[in-house]
Amino acid sequence: MPSPPFAPRPRSPSALLANPALRTYHPVAMQPDDFPRPDLARALLPHAFDKVDAAHDEGHLARVWRNVARIAAEEGGDADILVPATILHDCVWVDKASPDRAQASRMAARKAETLLAGLGWSAPAIAAVAHAIAAHSFSAGIPPETLEARILRDADRLDAIGFIGVARCFALAGARGAALYDPADPAGAARAADDGAFALDHFRTKLFTLEDGFLTGAGRRLAATRAARLHSFYDGLLDEIR
Ligand SMILES: [Fe+2]
Image (cartoon, rainbow, N blue to C red; front, side, top):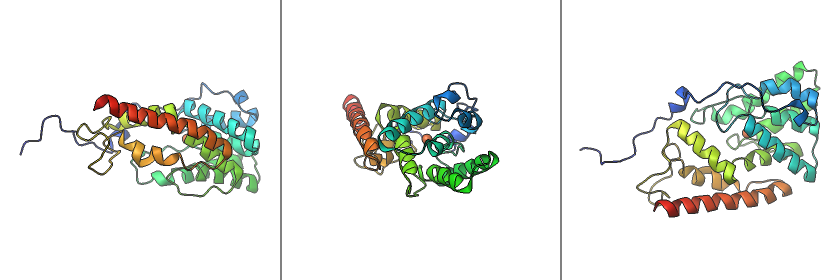
């Protein structure tokens, strides 16, 4: 039986692996003086990413650091831990579609351990940075046990919601070859969510679930504004396409 006209084409989850938009990281925008430990930042910035995509690049690092600084200004936190943890939190890139994706933050933590040991750091300080990096990830499922880990996780999650979260979501979905939404059922009312095929489905599978998971008071307050923007975009988009 012929397929119906305009039916969504099957999408390959491996499309991103061959994506020419995946770039090599060359640090140009962020300066060591952007951080309260410039010498440390100078040593670590070249290692911040092994590869970059539109959602994980220097712009993301700059935004996460700004969020970290905002939260830490209210909550406290040790800059000696927060600076390296922030710079290195995405230092190992793993495709979202890869079975190793849930291991990405642990892999980044191990790379950070090696880098900081090479700089002569003490074992407890290395462990504090590594824990914050490992626990920041949504998919890792590691409970943050320190203030610095809670701050980094909140700061990274703030960049996944709000207007910037929308932009990052659609950029990654486009790189993967996903459609904006399912023309037959945009909100997925009568089907299982499939965010590998439809970018808009990612709001339900992940983005909306993030807003209740913030762990610091400052993070929760900043998240409330961004969560409202996320829902406003989602509702507005559905209104325009129906
Ligand atoms: Fe990140």
